[in-house]
Length: 383
Picture 1: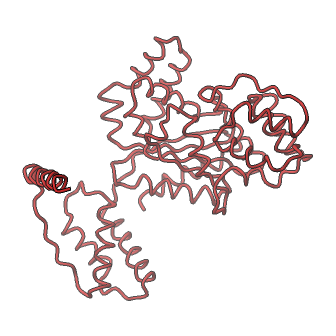
Picture 2: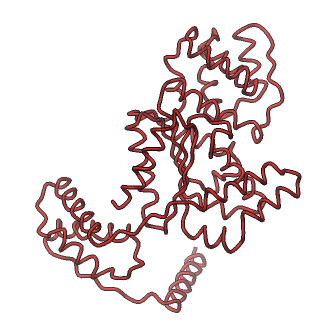
């Protein structure tokens, strides 16, 4: 609701993937204003367009400066159209070893990707021992086999040694991303759509890590990064723009950090990323008419879910929610949740809830925390 134009533009970009190649877009909004909801809407339209979709939330466990840690979480949340099971195995299934598709994939791996991936694909398509298939899928899913394991699999399959070459997961993991992008293309899907939520958490990394994270974003911006048919959406909280990009002058500091270490190409990529990030679409707040339409949907959905007839109109529900939460800075999700709770109460008790609010002051909060601490100490002493 209220994001129709943005979704239409994203839909057009996805439709152009086969001709324009890899693209990325950035969105920003305050917390609770619908970033995650929008990403799920993009997921829906991407699936309808026959795209493979990946959804990932950046966090301390998935820091964007370490793409080798992001990759397994990404693959674990990668879905083919109309599939309920995630993972890479479905992309590899039903590819006959002697097919043109298999030959094209092997040719790319041999000519452009790390020798390790060529070896894995050769063992997948032509290996005699199917017992190793799970190990190979595990590797392609990001749980990398060590060199000895991979060589042992190859020797048991083909009775010969294998050349793998020096592989660094921090340096060479990007070839795994390129392999997925190629698989999606060769399987004739419209493209690979990657949805990155809570990208503002990049701002919590150290300066060096932020510099690497910005350089990694650059890989997803255009075909020059190595991906051919991928569309990425990065969702940032608006505070990232003021607190990180603005207050810290973060991009310039990150670029300078890279230049100091002789990484001029990455430094320029980081500066290019700033231009893209600053063009982020700002999700507009919903006006009263749009909120009214939201309430119409909520009342209808609640009635269908619980097989009852709510004795309240959408307009009446909106007025009650606005009376309780009148502040213009109230988060959209807070009002939506309030409306659902209101309907829940009407359904269970047949009357409007009676709400009372007590002031939450810093003094009262400190008293509560002090009392909680004293209670904990008392319990510990008793134990």
